[in-house]
Length: 261
Image (tube, one colour):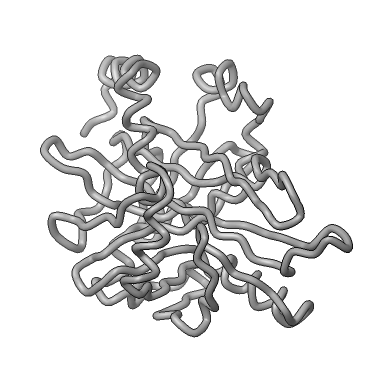
């Protein structure tokens, strides 16, 4: 797709309407919030962090994809506090025991999921209710000017109704233009004139509040089907840019390939 100004404006108008709403919901069907930290206690506030996991089956069984810094954060808490929980939905398990691969320079990690875990993880509501299975793997590379949908669970929205309950409202974009593409990453830049007026209005959010999306999925609609094309790994507050690792860096078994950045 070329960067035709007319087509870009048309796409922005569609993204602002009902079609954009449905496109924004799509990535959240395959995303689940994960939180980790001290186990709940009535004695006082416990330390809790969160990230986003992408649920996929690329041809060799179900797994969760997230960022290496989410896994390293769990390791740090485990070392500091000892009795630490890692939970996806209602499923509590140790991700280190099911880790397939981890690459710190690329900031990616893959976790094998058992079929009974998948059943429990996807049983609660529309968000995170599905495991994405691509038409073929790996997907073709993106080009600048194409539009993608992505989403996740910002830490800014995290709520704790009680000492043993954590709630994670979601956030997503149904039509963001790809600004740049390289072998190991691609990016989308937020355009404030189109985003700020309605951005996170319900929760009084600003762009700087997008931390916690790390590990969230990015998809592109290719006419007859969707392709899983990447994973969020960083947001630049200074330049309002969201950075992604391409999905093709992960093979069907969950191993991570690619030159280190």
